[in-house]
Length: 248
Ligand SMILES: C[S@@+](CC[C@H](N)C(=O)[O-])C[C@H]1O[C@@H](n2cnc3c(N)ncnc32)[C@H](O)[C@@H]1O
View 1 (tube, rainbow, N blue to C red):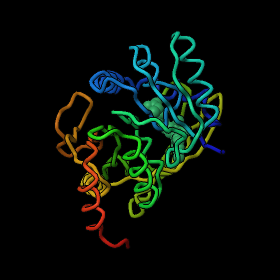
View 2 (tube, rainbow, N blue to C red):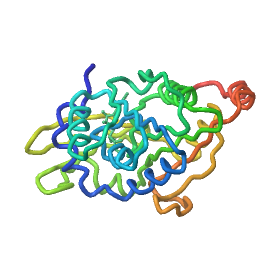
View 3 (cartoon, rainbow, N blue to C red):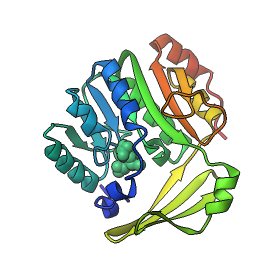
View 4 (cartoon, rainbow, N blue to C red):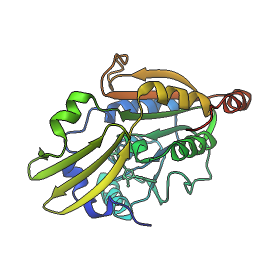
């Protein structure tokens, strides 16, 4: 299984060193659920390890062997156990059913097509116990951000550079990350928030909250959205599926 993250698994933690605002939020939600928690796209355990350190069982799935190796080291250093599993989030090697599935730090943007996103959401729904929640965050870039950053190398952290190539019409980002320990290029695809909401509703979820940030402030039009979606009953999901519009 190839992953663009394998080339930057040692770079990922320094690259995301300043991303800390979401940890407490996901930890609070994990406590509220009582666990166990499945994290799809667990990466280096940035979120999973603090949750496990709180005594909550975490199953973490990732398609990058390198990222999982770093996560295992991080868990060992913290003296906690995280159940790490190599696999694709569209077909996760998870038989357990849980009250909470999380997909932090925009990992869902790795789903490139409408079919991929629907498949991922169907999988999440299957992993959840009745009434369980799916919590994730994504972004949709603003025009100004795209204009300012397009095709320019920017230093994100000392010695770690990013090059973003935005395709506004296709709603895709090709992102290159370069640092002393590696370089990679990955593709991301975004949706505007109203389309995420529709997609969630059509795939068997009820949106309980759409925040604009991890402090739970309501979404009022920024780039980031944080979603809390509750698994609906099967009957609702069937109704939603039957009202699915035809694909372009
Ligand atoms: C931005 S990182 C987020 C990692 C971690 N959740 C965090 O908050 O730091 C995205 C992660 O998703 C993983 N990923 C991307 N596509 C995937 C897929 N199809 N199946 C499983 N994991 C995937 C990557 O390997 C990477 O570890």
